[in-house]
Length: 93
Image 1 (cartoon, rainbow, N blue to C red):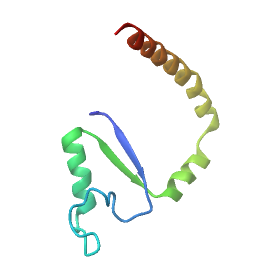
Image 2 (image 1 turned 135 degrees about the horizontal axis):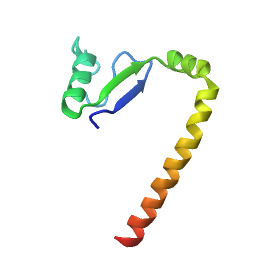
Image 3 (image 1 turned 120 degrees about the horizontal axis):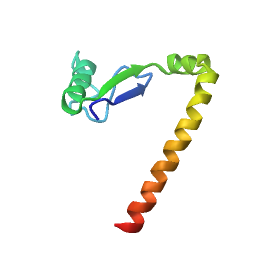
Image 4 (image 1 turned 90 degrees about the vertical axis):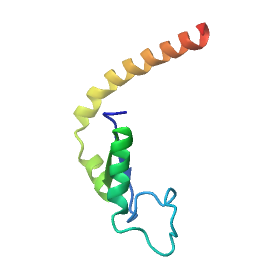
C-alpha cells in the first residue's frame, strides 16, 4: 500500500466522522483532518487526497475521452489475467 492513493470525495468539513472518539456534537480538534491524513500516511504509506464532489465531477467532464479509451484494452487484459489467477488458486489450492 506504500504507493496507494485514496481519493476522498466529500462535501463534509471533516474527513471521517465515524472514527472520531470524541463528542461529535460538541467539537472536533482544530487539526483533525491534518492529523487523520498524517496518521494514515505514516502508518500505511497511503496518501489521502480530499476533493469536493463538484471539483471531481468537473474533472470527469473535462477528461480526455481518447486517453480513457486507451486504458480499456490494458484494463481488460489485467482483468482477464487476474481472473485466470483466481481460477487457478481456487481450483488448485
